Every structure is written in C-alpha cells, then in structure tokens.
Length: 123
Image (cartoon, rainbow, N blue to C red):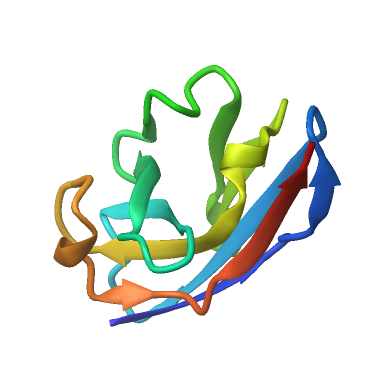
C-alpha cells in the first residue's frame, strides 16, 4: 500500500497554468507506476497521464498531450503534473493513483488513490 496526497488544485482562467503535486508515502517498495486521473461530476475517472517510475517515461492522453508534462522528484517521492494552456474542459477533480506493476489507463486497476484536488478552468 502507498499513501498519496495531492496538492495544487485551484481556479484559473483559460490559457493559464497550474502544477499539481502528488506526494507518495510507501513502505520499502516504491510504486512502479504513478498516474493522474480526473473526474467530472459523475462520469468515470479518465486517465490523464501515467508515469513509469522505473523507466521514468511518461504517457499522456490525447486531450492533454503537448500541454501537460510529468516529472518526478525522487528525493521527495513526489510526482508533478505541469499543466499549461489550460482549457475549460480540463476542469475536474484530479486524483493521483499508484500501482506496483506496469501502468494502465484503466482506473479500476489502481487500488491506491489520493483524496483528489479540484481544478477549475473558466473561459
């Protein structure tokens, strides 16, 4: 198990930027994959970006590619999501998730979740 805490959600205007942080507190073993999902109202959680902590390679959904960037600070076990050129459709609750195997876009495959942080983008 790993405890995840997100920071950085806020309200911004379209075209603005935010950086989300996810701090992971794990035991002796670090997660293989850390991911960001977002949820709008009662819709299913949508995968936004995935980070393989071993290869340090990031994967992005088509809707955020070239606007969002993942990075990790190993010393602090923190995963960052830099979000630029934000759009109203980026609005939602952003959740950090982790698993101890390969990354997957399916939210049901993650059992470790943070509490979420709200991002609101106004036009």
